[in-house]
Image 1 (cartoon, rainbow, N blue to C red):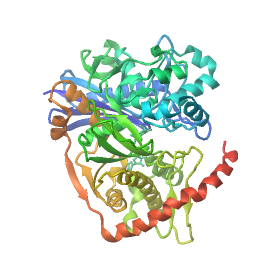
Image 2: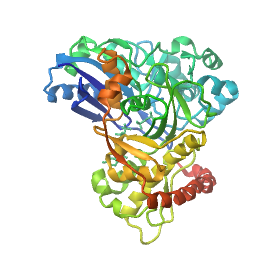
Image 3: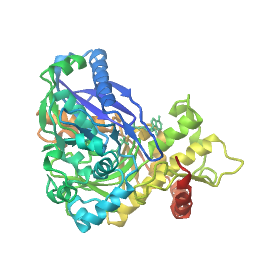
Image 4: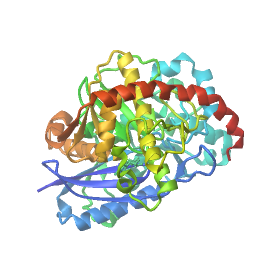
Length: 498
Ligand SMILES: Nc1ncnc2c1ncn2[C@@H]1O[C@H](COP(=O)(O)OP(=O)(O)O)[C@@H](O)[C@H]1O
Ligand SMILES: O=C(CO)[C@@H](O)[C@H](O)COP(=O)(O)O
């Protein structure tokens, strides 16, 4: 018997999975870590919390699985994207990591636009958005010059964890694509972008494919994890690229919906030719020389966990959502917009905040819970709409992430997207994609597609129900107006945020 491990370094927790050659998940473990929001719009984590959480989870995995640890052949990673880790010459972080959902960098985004003009979209294939990495680098340079002076190299979250486990510095194309410093089609660090901001090439780590073997576990770390020192380590990819691999989104015409902390609608792209003019993100896939486009809802699952933590702290998601299916579409006239930390698609706006519209005396907590789920799904439907408007057929969507654990939400996705929604047998999200990269890297399969045929197992299909779909079509048009109607109010409220 031989095994691989997939590590999913998420925003709320790190999850690790042990899989056999048949793609069966034999064991899993996870560790959560804190998020720090020092000011409104800020979001940071401690890089060493990720490392310790990963080592603890791997140790638990090898203890509980009963599988012989020496039979683990390879390990790979999926990571939350865009987060900035700055390392000094000794490889030590100079400050906390600034995360993808941190929106403090609006001024730096405008600076990037004015310095690079059209070149930005042409080379990086994406507009300057607060969540991406380059604006964060410029923010530290401007606001924390002492920390910046110590920084010699930057990494993304999973690259830092992999560095601490192997001692090797790398970044894969799928994650590098989210930095706004990569020539996405050319697969090199962009000389033009680096030169425009006075960043030396040595500031960027060497680029590799997601399935590349980048080293083995350091002896000290392997014993802490309970794994053999020779365990091969494969680069891995951005969480959305790995989510796509784990959902089998490996050929044209396939679409994925992921509801994790963020939410995405992702569509496979075989080449770099399609131009969405920056309306959706365009990144390198974890499959060699492929790409994907995606729209992002910043606070998808986060909106529901905010609601639970604020109004039902001690309840599980299942308890909170019990009975939500008995509430009719539209939650009795209650609409929610999930702009808790601003938004990306289709409104790139760091200032907008969420709303409940239409509250009346008949509403109970369950109506609010349904409205939150609907609002998140309406927001994702804006991305589905953009893909359809660009001429793509979206008739089947593979649904992954924590949100895919609830069957009522899966049916709601089918009704709002007006498409078949497919759930996977063993919903493991990006961790499965990471394990598949290790399995392919180890040579178990001739291609990722071949690996997907054996590892990705579809289960139920949720079909749109005509009456709910019709109700949601009307509600979606009202939902879309809430952004325009509340944007000015939120601009005025900004002065009152701390
Ligand atoms: N049983 C459940 N029912 C509905 N939603 C859930 C359930 N469990 C988790 N979620 C949602 O999934 C989110 C976490 O998803 P996950 O994919 O684990 O996130 P991440 O990878 O960002 O850490 C939560 O914020 C919550 O909104
Ligand atoms: O910023 C993005 C994608 O551009 C996010 O999707 C992050 O990659 C974090 O994802 P989750 O923690 O929600 O998985």
